[in-house]
Length: 303
Image 1: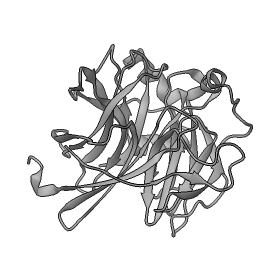
Image 2: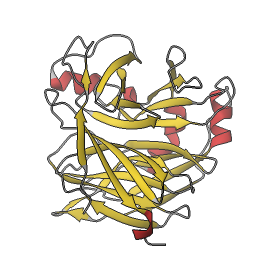
Image 3: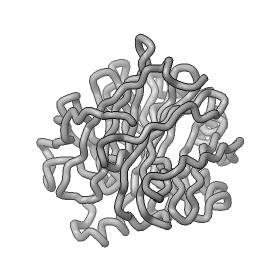
């Protein structure tokens, strides 16, 4: 069991609607900055450790307030990846990705960073439908929930469901992805690794986010949400955190003592400990997302 600490709620001082982010779905930590995408917003949140933040526009226009209409129209940004330096982006970039579960959810946004980790210029929208096409053939209910770059690959996390509880890490050659972004053909996935993560009280645990580790491994968050598809939400029975080795072996899985739906994760390694940050989604626009922290002793992990 992992006992996370609640650090803050994610509040937004300049929001025209609710003065917080509620459906936090992807997380990147850069120094003291925490970048967060929410699956029912058109903005990227930038927060400090106290949970205070501002919003940066990713798409034009406003989403409807009615929950059903909002769900149908939203870009469903579920993943946020930190990209290494590449052409025109000497300090790297952030990549926000839609889940791919509906045609309007195949959009992505590229955000250049400067040397200090600040957003450098206006968001650049990218149509990810050509890259997702091969994934739809692979998964009838595509639902990309996490993304990160590790060992020369863009890694995407397909989230399972109650009807199909097998999750998959799907790898694309990073150089081929860059060539596609410069106008080349969409790359095909290189390989995939499937994971069955067990359950909480009979509800399968399924990926909600992931982040790369310095040794080539990665960490992930997973939630036990009682739903059978890639569109409808369901009651959540809790969440867990897992660590995967560079060779793909699951090194450990720890349920969270706090009952919540953890949807975003970031990690650093220092002094033999894995420090984790998580953000939550309450599936309630009136409820602010939580910022959590936890740590693991790396010596306690299986080899």
